[in-house]
Image (tube, rainbow, N blue to C red; front, side, top):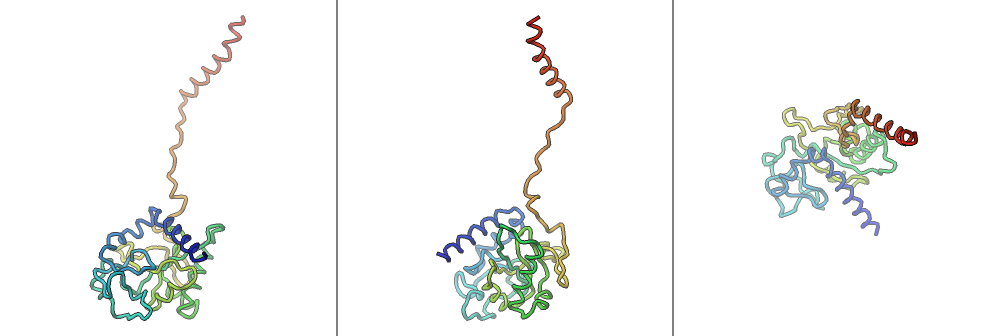
Length: 228
């Protein structure tokens, strides 16, 4: 039952994440590449999809109990710019009530990566971007073998090969993470407040207000005039 509940939670969270317009922009290349990619069963279509598989349909070395890190297609066959199987996008899940603060989520990112790189100081050096708004995850510069270990850690939802969000500038997106500090970049941030379209404010029409006032006064005077 616990496994079923966990699976249901992951499915609902996935649906919530993918319903966001910002996430659709963030992961737009995935759908286009899905038909020709080899995909790990534990992950949605990879941002680093390949043109061919190396071990049969649905195969990925990241899902192999005895992975051979050399049996995937060469980097020259990668469809998405920036995808080099060294930059990884790690998406995590958090409680929604109460929702943790940005500081708590970033601290969780560091502790999660520290579990596979040895220390929080080393983890801070490996993390190059974080996000706590559009999605909850971070980018890490680690080996393919370590990415396999990360995906089994508590709270980790997806582990995906990262790719450029801003191709001309070779930028993976998100807020920068430098020396353990978050450097916010508004162009890559998307908050709940932005999801709600601003409703048009009612125009103040002086003529309409005057007319309504005159009609109200006429109705009030009407009965008294009849009594006279």
